[in-house]
Image 1 (cartoon, rainbow, N blue to C red):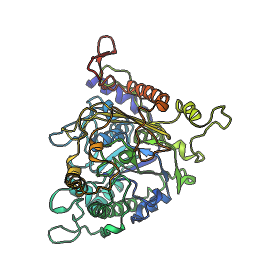
Image 2: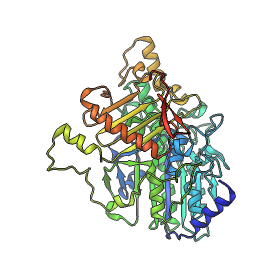
Image 3: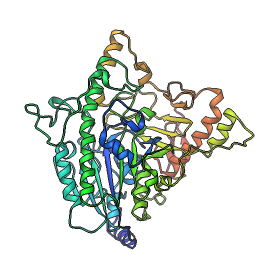
Image 4: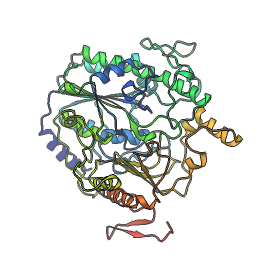
Length: 518
C-alpha cells in the first residue's frame, strides 16, 4: 500500500467514532473443548466454567484453518489465510507472512481511536499489518514468560488495564498452553514454573495433577496407556491456562471494566494429537467459543448451536465497538469483503437449531437436499503449517454435511513435528510397525492417504469415518456443496481455486485445463 493510499484509508477510518466499550480476547493454543459446558466432566477448569456461566457458549464453532499462525491471522483479519497470505507458520525458517496490504484489527481499531494491546503469543506478521500499541509478545518480550507465566501475564494485564488512558481498548492475550514443548520442560511445558528444582516457580499457579485413568479420551485418540499419559500432561498444562484466565478476569474487574467489556474465549486450532491439529475434520476444526457480553445478560449460561466460524470474530469486535470496516484492495483484486458475521445479533435471538420447513412436500433425504442450498455453512482453508507440510485443503461444513477437497491428494498427508514426536503418535507408529493391536479410529495408511474429495453425512456419521463422496445417492449433495465451495473460493480470491486439474489464466480470468489426468 502506498503512503498516500494509507493516508486516505486512515482519514476515512478516523471519521467514525467508536463506542465507549472494550474488548478482551483470550486465545488459547492447541486447545479443544475441554470444558464442562461442552460435556467434558473429567477436567477441572473452574475459572472457564465461571466465564461460561456469564457467556453464550457456541457449540458449533469452527476454526477457518487448523494451524497456528494461519488461524491467528484469520482471527485478527477476518480473512481466510489464502486471502490474507499467511499460508503457514510465521516463525523461524517457515517465515510465512500476511500480504503487506492486509488490514487487521489492531490497525483498523487504532485508526478508530481504540487503544490496542497484545500479551503473549502473537505468531503473525509483518508488524506493519499487526501493529499493536502495547506489545508484550515474542516481538518485544520473552515468549515463554509472556505466554505461560501466568503471574507475569497478570502483571502485564494490570499495567494495560489500569493505564491512565480514557480510550476504549482491545486487549488480545495469547496463552501458549496447551501447545507441546521439547526438552526438559515436559511434553506440554507442564513442568515450567511448577516449583521443581531448575523449573522455577509461578506464584499464582497451583498445578492440578491427573492420572491416566482420570482423563477423557476423544474418539480420534487411541485408548492406550501411552495416549492416556499424554492427555494427562495436557490436562495439567490446561490448569495453568485456566488459572491464568481467572487472574486476567480478576484484573479486568479490579480495573472497573467488568461491565463495559466484551470477553471472548477461543483457541486457534485443534489439540496437538493425530487426527486433530492441521486437519479440517471436526476433530481438528471444532473450537471452544465463549462470548460474554455485559449488554446481553439473557445469553449468560446458555448454549448456542448456530454454525460459527472464527472468521466471525473480527466482525463481532467491529460491531461491538461500532467501528466500520474500511474499503481497500489487496493487489488489484476486488474490494476486500468480510465473509463472517457479527455474533452479537445471535445473543438476542431465541436459541434454536436451524429451522426447517415443516410443510415441505419433501421428506427425508429429499428435504435435506432441498434445504442444503440455503443452509448456513462454515468454510475451511489450509495450505501448509510447517514449510515442509504442503497439503492444501478446502472445506465447507453445514449442520448436516462436510465436504473436504484435498488438492495434493496424490501425496501422503504430512505430520507436524510436534505431533510426530508425541507419545501418542509414536505409539501409533510402534503398534503399526510391530503389528500389535491399535485401537485407533483409522489405520495409519488411511490417515496418510486420502481421496481428492471427502464427503461426510454428519447426521449419520459424526466422527467422519465413512467417505460417501463416490456414492451415487450423495451426488446431488456433492454437486451443491462443490458449487458453494467454488463460489466462496472465488469470492475470497483464492489462488488455488483452479487447482489441481486446472490453472488460472490471468488474461482471460478463467480456469484452463492442464490435462494432467486428475
